[in-house]
Length: 201
Image (cartoon, rainbow, N blue to C red; front, side, top):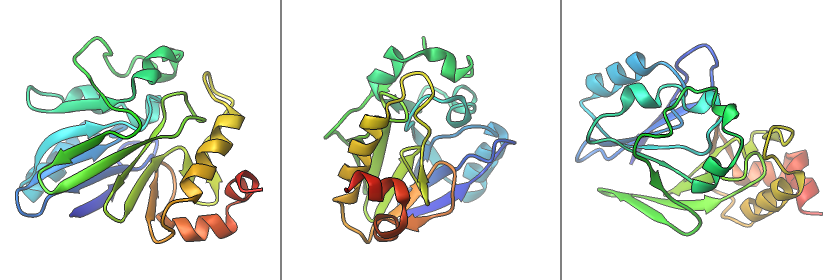
């Protein structure tokens, strides 16, 4: 398994490219902007985009989705995001186009890659984290030294604390790859992140 952290576009939100080194099958997680740059990255590396995984529907995580769609690319999100106030997407993604839905306990296999889905509401009702090997893609649930805001439509402080508590119980060696910060480890966040510490009280 290989991955790269990408920050295309002016929002500097983190997008992740994950691929199978043997087959070249690739996944993009939260492509928020810069579709042309992302496509060039894929082409230069000789990768074939198979799936787009969304941790939630906020506009800074979805802006490049429609431009990257084609007949072979499947777009995944939690159905509960569609029940939220969709103004948070700012109309940057056509939600009437075909979508695939995942939720707690689902596993998506992309050649040798296995992505386990964890439902982690709080930042939004349908926020998810994705675990693949030793990597944990946390979107705006767990961020290095922080967590996602809960004052947007559909946010819940109680749900966020429950989700952070749940993540804290996972293997501390996991590398945390969030939507807005440098990589960290779950063990480090468990020891130092004030929001996770509050969740564990």
